[in-house]
Image 1 (cartoon, rainbow, N blue to C red):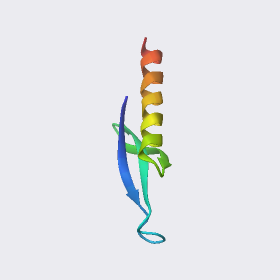
Image 2 (image 1 turned 45 degrees about the vertical axis):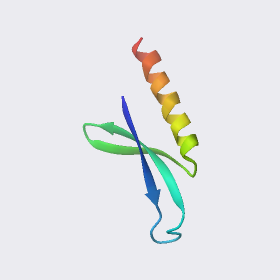
Image 3 (image 1 turned 180 degrees about the vertical axis):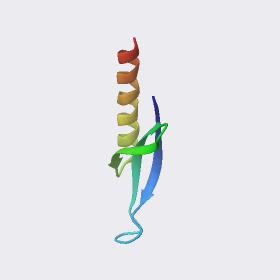
Image 4 (image 1 turned 120 degrees about the horizontal axis):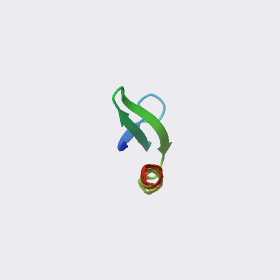
Amino acid sequence: MTYAIHPVWSTTQQPQLLRYGLYKIGAEGEQEIAQAGCLESIEALRQQLLQLALLENA
């Protein structure tokens, strides 16, 4: 499974507020799974999903 983290800016309400989105990459494109205000939080979630995928494929 492939996951990507992208910065997400709210351009209409609070453009100074930066958030991060976690996306699952597939044949259909990117699908947003989660958002967080802290990069460390979204990276921890990505690591958990990768570990789950490894366990399922074992």
